[in-house]
Image 1 (tube, rainbow, N blue to C red):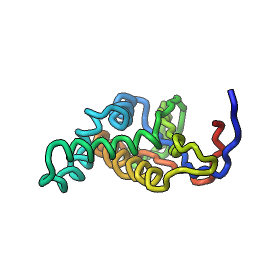
Image 2 (image 1 turned 180 degrees about the vertical axis):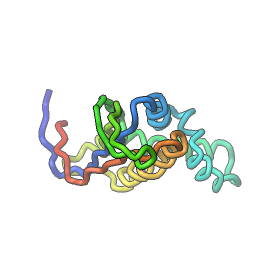
Image 3 (image 1 turned 135 degrees about the vertical axis):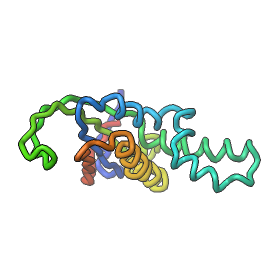
Image 4 (image 1 turned 60 degrees about the vertical axis):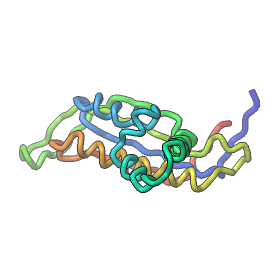
Length: 161
């Protein structure tokens, strides 16, 4: 296998920290980015598609396919791991130990064949999908939580290709 370190490729790493009891919610929300039928049912995607109501069914399907494809180009999967944490609960007025789950997503245009390349539009579209769709949906799916941490690492990440 040939490889090289592509330290100039635009990329971001996101981590989402949630209580372990919401692992199914986290997987459900993230999996919707990888299955076209689930992707099409994301409320924000439905909203975007509503602007194309005058287009033919074929054109709407093509637009949806382009949105989904852009997401797929930049977000190819995620990893999850468990953590043990402590935090101060304002509701309970005490320090609470809690098992947590963390999902890590790396956003980069990996399909661009040019080292240091990548389509900025694809990268920005994927970043917006994560920052807006995922965060908003997680907040809606777990409204009882005091906090859900969403961390973005903006340093360039070397990618082994």
